Length: 199
Image (cartoon, one colour):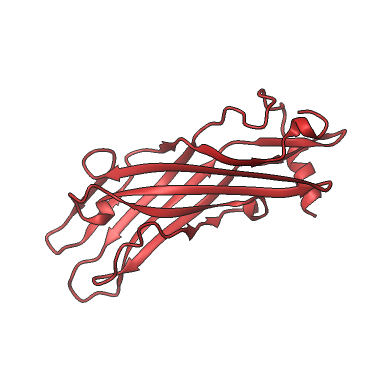
């Protein structure tokens, strides 16, 4: 089933990837939605701090010629990531890898994970933080194994590249001003289309 889906993804692409190598020039990932929240200290149904976002990898990564009709590829994917910790006594989960949830039918192609990174410490955590993403893609096609692992980091701080503030009751909330590009670095690569019949 996976092979059939990969073939379909490949044949649906109108034009081949221009760069014919294992590590082509890739477009950065894009954060299209980001929201953060801290409840007030007053009695409330909200018991957690939260940072939630949507991240997209727009790239189609060519793997190998799978048939005379086209190539097997890692298609573009989008995932929703959610970081939560208890309020008021919980500690931010710095460095803890949290698996994101793929949207649509992208689950069979790999996924993102996210880890919270400490900010400058000048503002409330949900308004001053960093995010480290890891994207892992792997599949076997006709007995050939392919894997790509990428990493990327980005920081947010209210008043700089992030909209956010705290109210008099202690509630803090933030959101993106606009989409944010996240440059990624390839840290692991197994299998190249040049090894299996060319790109």
